[in-house]
Length: 137
Image 1 (cartoon, rainbow, N blue to C red):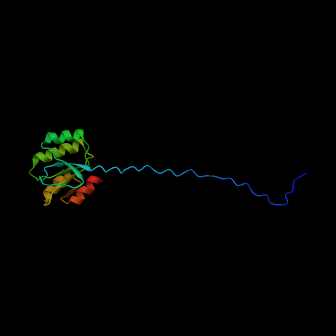
Image 2 (tube, helix red, strand yellow):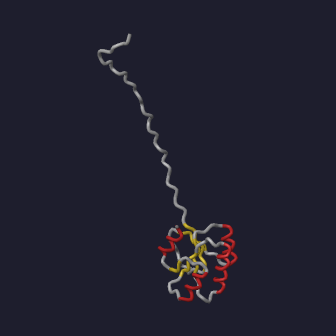
Image 3 (spheres, rainbow, N blue to C red):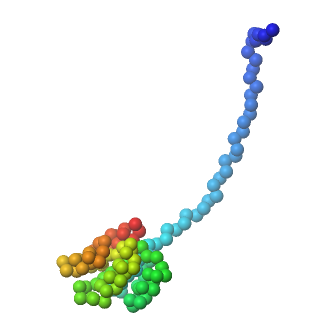
């Protein structure tokens, strides 16, 4: 015979306890690595805040640094008649084609811009904010 319930029996309460919240270990933020820029022919007093600027003294030192280290950008200051620098940039462009470079110039002539762009310069500027943005991106 079926049991007939005439009154509601109280439901048994099940106690569920949530685990205690685990506090995340306070990890200090990792300081951002500054962008590394290789400078060729730059003015001596030029400093770019937030950027590690390396200035090799010779063309051979430039090539050695490129072989041993990674750079976010190359910053070059040159005039049209600086054949040594342009030959170096041709060599860099041939062996490190994905490495971006900027011509650092305040008074760029048409001939200088054509020469720089023909060798793959992404920008021609002396604006430090633009240089920082290019180095960090």
